[in-house]
Length: 255
Length: 289
Image 1 (tube, helix red, strand yellow):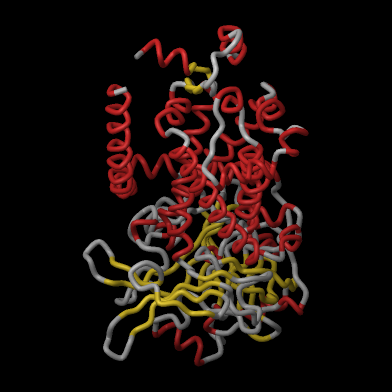
Image 2 (cartoon, rainbow over the protein chains, first blue to last red; image 1 turned 30 degrees about the horizontal axis):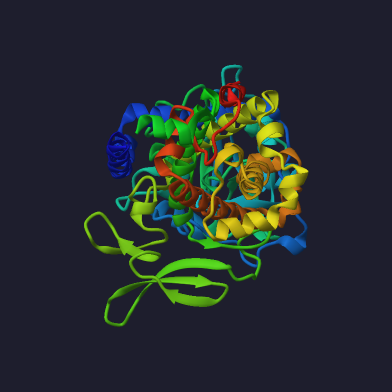
């Protein structure tokens, strides 16, 4: 009996000790590079599983009745950049989208030229990584249309979107994002210039923003200035393929 | 003393090694999933209903902080329009420096402790994979070895004794002898509900929040009321699982803490027998797989 009581006491103490230590331990582990690398295998598992299941699946499209009364602006609502503010004042008349990098025919597209290309309209849900969502109606040109005009090279693997909004107070560290060719050529992947039937407002990313509907909100780059096709994004900014990715978020944001 | 014990009790082999390993894997996964989930929830500490968060419907739950005119921060919990002051726990709680800050669930309940959405997501999705794989192994094993059919499915006599079992539980009367070797009917119903309803539902509602998973069969999420309702169900089911774990742990404690824990570590479970057991050896051997 005393043997059992001793074991019991040991066990109770061990349990209390373990729970206190493990909480502190989890925070220590979060700081460890090798452990976060292990944790991020979850991301590659998800990405590979998703790609295995379906490459071309279509995001749900909604009816007008489902649209959110106003589409929330998150992150930057007015880029802290004089150059951008001049573009706003002139109605983006001097804005042109440069598409370059690993392409046969680098080109610049004015807003009018983009709007003249075949368009697609879709009512989709925007899922923020934070947990909220909003439904809006987007009209834009399929990224595929634009890419087919610049003819990506065989070795182009990612499309990088360079944006106008600096993320630091001093005007540096511009927002950027990247997606792979699979998503770039998806039917619902748009360079959107209209939201809810009106010209895309500045707070939502004027003159164009990306819609890549099977991923989270931070992939939907706003204020796109330049598109670059690359075989690797390791040399760009923090090397993780996006502003939020550089701070630790997943590059694949399908979850 | 030793002979008196053996006369009144016997050690049976209750849980096989795979079950024990999967049980403790599940304990770790569920703990991490819950706590990292609360950190993720803190990034948007509100629960909505419908296809999106912006549909003119008020949230059914909201945790927030408000500043009083005195400059003092208070934590508020709003459930279905009724507001509670929950300063110190929900809405506003202390950070590691002891300062009261605005956050949904307090740092002692989240992984990681500080508000850190990116890291909480890494924890959550890694352990979600482990949890799903573990659950899949458990189901395969339990059906193949007939653990489900033999030990978990209720029998006709179980169902007939359901009221008796409720009374026994309310009076904290537990089974002894032969009866203690099997699960009682409420226990079976609890385990079956968790294994076949709550856990699949919490996983499914997790998938419903993924924009990719939603695209597999467009519109399937609407069967559950839409994506934000799915998020709300995910949260509620997580707490139902916490309720199950609380009752489970309570029963573990009052029906013999060490004996129960040992049975989930070494597999051996001591059954007290009031009367001398006939064919003792045969029965004990019969329990072994």
